Length: 405
Ligand code: HGY
Ligand code: MN
Ligand code: MN
Picture 1 (cartoon, rainbow, N blue to C red):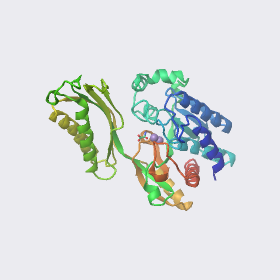
Picture 2 (cartoon, rainbow, N blue to C red):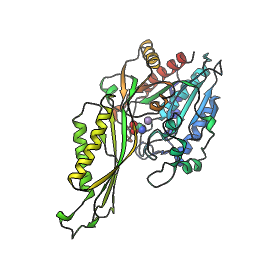
Picture 3 (tube, protein in one colour):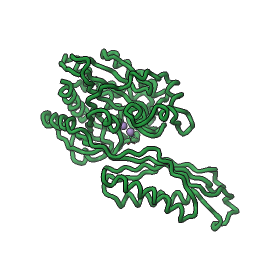
Picture 4 (cartoon, helix red, strand yellow):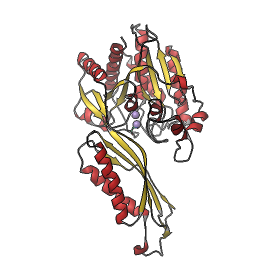
């Protein structure tokens, strides 16, 4: 089976790139740190003897030929970009775990018919360029090239130029093609496996999401002279929306969550009534049937609270995607492997978005989770036990061996 120490060494070496003081990483998409991580990954791929390529969105693919070069591809991977002050396991485990599997298959001379490809997708997090999963979405029909290239970060830098700056504008024909099966290994980023003392999650699907950017329009004015009855304070109204949103989600079934992660006001000074407030909304919902109704409720809630204060607002829908249910063939194979390897596991859905959500558009797809200690992720405390990682990557190994016969 896989070599745990070899995988751990690579994971820790990758974690040095963009390392933060408290043991996390900041390796934003298309940043200098991201470039360094990309170069290191491609170096490892070449050392293992994979054919390395990257496409016009900077998605990196390492290919191990099988006995039938025309056979459909079995692909595994994830992403190596992080959120600011994120963890060293999110995404990276899926890429380096897949690399470890391929190196083990090659090293053991395991026969396999299908070519096996390891992939690292660009801008999975959506922390720098929204929406999330741009790289996988751009090659699976979710986003056009023009849309993707034109996305800007909060400082106004465009995706296209930033990709050029790090030297990863590859050829269009290098995009993933003829992919029959995709498996993404990932940390759970929640508490379920740890609470139930299980080692592996066989992931059957991903919750739907909607990402919005809301701007509340008020009236800038002097903080000292403007009577309260005269005010159109966009920040006070925005806070009313934020509180109503949290109450709304608290009243919904488990799995329905609402988050306001970013907010900025203008003119953003101590002595002026905020004339404009812009904030993001991230809603997740695992239930296919309730999905549309819940998102309509959110839009109605925003407009109701704003109009009660006699202000106006604009709602920019960044991206909405319904829940996905993964392939029974691939979920079934992973389930069978867990039973054969006598690994403690459970079937579960993912609350977090992953590149697998979009790979599901073009290939039979499923995911494998390993536990997150205290369920924490997208923070420097993100941690997973190496013994759990070893068991999880062995499940990935056995599933890929079976699926590539
Ligand atoms: O936001 C997400 O669900 C993922 O971590 N990008
Ligand atoms: Mn991730
Ligand atoms: Mn993430």
